[in-house]
Image (tube, rainbow, N blue to C red; front, top):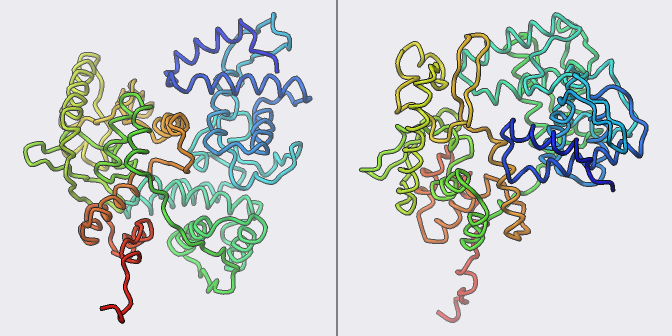
Length: 464
């Protein structure tokens, strides 16, 4: 495999720095570019950049690359294609044009197709030479009727119920996939048989997991009941993917420490909060300065799953780190005020209810993004918190460097939090409260993660 030509590498590194790509991830970005140059030299590819990305991603998937790695590879290529000049000294001539590539993960429907297969007629807009937008389901399609239903009625119904953005995105994505499966069949002509056919297709042809099929089922149920006002049907005879028994992956205390040793700031503090407080990743990233009560030693999670609030103890061992992080946030905030920014992003109508809250220090994110984001609609600059993807890649690298062979995600630390409390003989109801579970049966799954010492000590009644 040939190395990356010097002139390309220099410009690519400069772009990585400009786009604030994490330093620890840059080697991987160079690796994907190198793989792509080698791939291009071996195969005759179409001129369309998005099609090149799709073919490359399919090739990498066939080699067993994970979904996160494929997303990173697509992003690396989108950055590469955004370069404007031609590197004439490269062994393989690369024309670097203005057309942005499809910075996208390839969706479940695309899996299993041959390398050279394509269906531009049915492909959504994200695969037609545009830069990937995670809200691709809100883009216009050939069916104006479907566009009105998804971008108008569905959004309104979701917002009326105060469902999360994740729910909106999931329901809109499945509605679009349903539309594509039916080849843009008019919504007025839909029936329960269409739903049955699609769910059967997912289970039999695509062999999706039980959770994926259930998410599709709930999304289409919402679409029929609240948007189309149609009969959803019984659907009992639809083949359902069998739900496998699930036991959470749990790290030992030593493994948690090993991962922390290979993380840099602020990811170290994020993981300590995930493990030390049992937080979900989105709960951690959405923490604000006002959520911490150091006098009482309590952290209040205001926007948990299902919009539920709860309190958890602040780990005493990281109090100083938290105070130092808040000091950094204050310094960033002071600079933002001087630059004339419009404040942080606030949920719902808080911006109108508390007009000065967006610029108040207590409402600032504990983990803000490095740069301000320009909001085109409002013509103003706001500061967002870190994204999930900002944490996932550094965490993945840290796990590999620590030599841990378990499948570790950000949620693994929440599992470890609950399991270690259970091992320390904490009451299951207490753990349920700390995790924010509505039903204790959800918390009971952690009993499978604890080695049962009672079984080893079990005696026969004859020996009593």
